[in-house]
Length: 390
Image 1 (cartoon, helix red, strand yellow):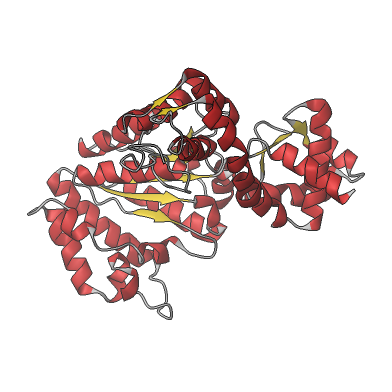
Image 2 (cartoon, rainbow, N blue to C red; image 1 turned 45 degrees about the vertical axis):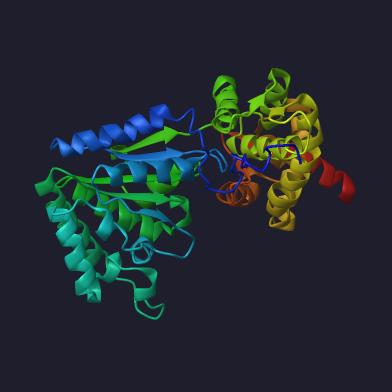
């Protein structure tokens, strides 16, 4: 290992939901959340804010940052990650009670949280996961609404508010999602209550199926980083450890990642690991990136591409093969009708397969009637699997 390498921990975070050292390219999204807070603290209403985007673009990172900022401002702002089959009321029951000690001392909101935690019973929804046995029925939404209303009323006395920051909204059932929407609309009309969430690109249409009044939701796209943002996301964490990137190395890693935040972290992490063993460290060179790229790509194929492809049904794989074949002619976006024709099926007959792949986050619909793969480079992987199966 090069001299001084051990004193410089790798600052890149290629884990799902792990926060990067430099949160770049998200200033507009953070400003919108700050506007919601300002509106509610001033006594005005504010639309619910939902961030939509593909997996790996940093929605979870963004939500966690927003939740932390709200908590630092004195708000009760639990971050919740939902999963299929888990209703939001049960999820809130798994939120740790650390907020009771982090809220401002002496505030009405602090006292109210403490009271609810001590009370238990039907209002145990604010307790820790250990206090919510699996065999106890989830609290009714009416109870949940009472809890949140009680907290928001206390927060209003403090000039603060309550926010639910909810990730993976597309994972809940339509019935649960409809209940969430009704609860949110009732609270936001009366109290300083914010609902801030995130989900895959099909979330707006999914919510529209679950409930009315969805015009009160603001959907904010969360996309790949532009080139200058991507360069900053790579350069700034290294600078914090007194490590520099050669310009050609920086260009290589940004090009390899294609602006996809998860890939940026992964390629940068592996390039750092290679560089740390080189005599040129604390510089990261073009040679380091070249040596790291196959290591990163093996991880992508095994942990990203392979997992998604292997989790698809045989019918879904045939759909993916047809998309990949069409992309050789049409480019990165293909028409859903053309996919159906390639499969010699009616569009209505293959629509359930398309919709299942969208729900799984493997493909998405960037425009009406158009389809694309959700992860950069997945087309080449699917083409390779098709050749293997031929």
